[in-house]
Image 1 (tube, rainbow, N blue to C red):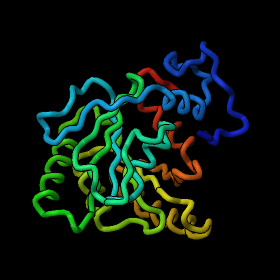
Image 2 (image 1 turned 120 degrees about the vertical axis):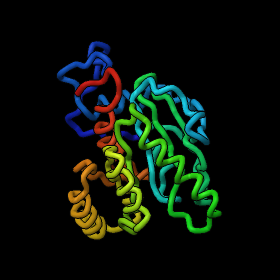
Image 3 (image 1 turned 90 degrees about the horizontal axis):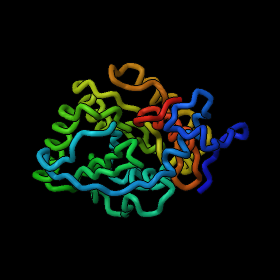
Image 4 (image 1 turned 180 degrees about the vertical axis):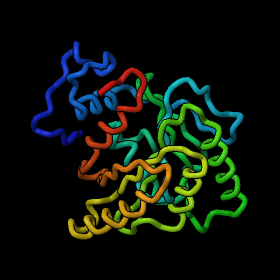
Length: 233
């Protein structure tokens, strides 16, 4: 997969493995090496008492149903089927945990904002997500995915408010940036950025991505690599 590294990126030799914390490591290359590691499915948790031990830093991905969450996870890890994609919104109905090379746990959260889901199911998802966010001490950041074609919706703001109240750092990432014009992308980026600066737990860096073209994938990997165990930039 094309990692879209900058022309000045230098390849890391064995002595520059990101696990060594080499001071001169290039962030983009460090991120590429981390996400090129084996990424294995651990388990799916349907309740708080079934979650795996909190042994490694965790990074969770949240977003409206059909925002492109599974596609982004696949693009980040350079795989086609790490997270299953579907044309049916709301397919992920549990917290799915993936071990990224023993350095970082990726958590695929249930999609939200799908109006056709049964009320009881939505309430169960909400309880699971709230409990996870408030009680997971190793959770380093939540990536809140927002469809660049639509910008922030009320359901996104509800999630952001939940994260603010739980004091969990989150970062907004725009998806499907290839589906709109450069001018439209610039406009939605400005609008979203203006809103997240008012949020208490929001990370200030906003990244626009496309799982199809690779836009922003290398930059996002570099950002997320800073959260992994044994990786220093």
